[in-house]
Amino acid sequence: MIPHRTGDAAPTERGVAETEIRKRIVERGRIPFSEFMELALYHPVGGYYSTRRPVGAQGDYYTSPAAHPAFGALLAVQMERCWELLWRPSPFYVVEMGSGDGLLAQAFLAYAENLNSDFCDALEYVALDRRRSAVVRAQQPWSQQRVTSDGIPLVGVHGCFISNELVDAFPVHRFRIVDDHVREIFVTEDDDGRLIEEAGDPSTLTISERLASLDCRLPEGYTGEVNLGITNWARDVSAALDRGFVVTIDYGYPAQELYAPSRSQGTLQTYFQHTESGGPFNRIGRQDITAHVDFTALERDGEMAGLISLGIRSQSEYLRELGAGRMIDALRQMPMSAHDRDANMMALRELVNPTGLGGFRVLVQHIGVDGVGYSELMPSQNRLESLTPPLLDSAHTPLFEGRYPQHEFELESLWPFGDPDDDEAPPDER
Ligand SMILES: C[S@@+](CC[C@H](N)C(=O)[O-])C[C@H]1O[C@@H](n2cnc3c(N)ncnc32)[C@H](O)[C@@H]1O
Image (cartoon, rainbow, N blue to C red):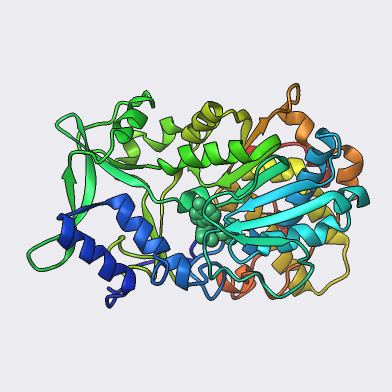
């Protein structure tokens, strides 16, 4: 997720989620940060994801599906290839977890209509979100299923699980290294009734076990997060998926980088109206709280659950391998106004910009598909040559207007795929 600006957010008046948090603190003295974050984000009445539409211009940040429909289109191309590798099952399930407003589903399903018609006929797209208020946008095609659930109500799936920015929305435990010991950060109240942090004995041994497994030396005072929800999630996916692939897209790092001494204050962030806001105790239930994802934990917990890692790429590399470069070349040839071309270029470029959304990571895992390597997941030359880009519509975040109101940029010079003959080198090597 990416905000447009950074700055301070004003404090909030008390809402339902905060009232529940304070009630629990009065009853128990303090609560783990993870419990605070669970209530702040997912309280059924007052939680952030229960009450707000967070993604897009009217929300608090934008994500890849909100930036440009090419993201969903390229994932459809990826899923068509996975369907082939699974010997073309019918039905072929694509289960999107954390589907939010359904923008990815919408772009995916619209583009799938252009792909192999047998793939399209076999496709069963299931969009899962624990957020009851997630509204699937009105535009069709939306002939597939949308399910509200924070578990996975499926078994025996042949197909793929995909997610974008799901795992960064799992509540995290926070910790601090004090006198060479792992202490957990709890939330409590001071004498004036302000919410404050308090370090104490961990509420679960799993925090220390996770940190011990990292092989990282954490210095005194280091403060960070562990995302223990990954373990159960990997188990649930593995239990539901008989045979197929898991594609997980999010921002984060391998453990060695995530827990590097240079990140000694962790990666917890809060977002409100496209602004990085000032800490988790502001605007409780009205601002997002998130932390970078530990991709080593994703891989390890996956392997423990039977999900075999095929590789991790940057989003930039991954989308490029799926044909983002072809799409931009085709975009150049399409008849449209200069404004529309520039807006589409800008948003497509953002998807592969190594310092923007393109810097996210993509983990691909499989279960029960032996003998397949990462490179075979990529589409054939024929498929790449036939790709045409979908175009922005009013559902997408207007990045062009938001970030570059004067339209002064020479977009062709910014685009990393400027030379079609140069299509093979990843953009961050230029
Ligand atoms: C950061 S938003 C991303 C939404 C969308 N994927 C996108 O890219 O715009 C995270 C979403 O994951 C959902 N979520 C979090 N935990 C979940 C879980 N265990 N099962 C299903 N959905 C979950 C939240 O309700 C929220 O809609």
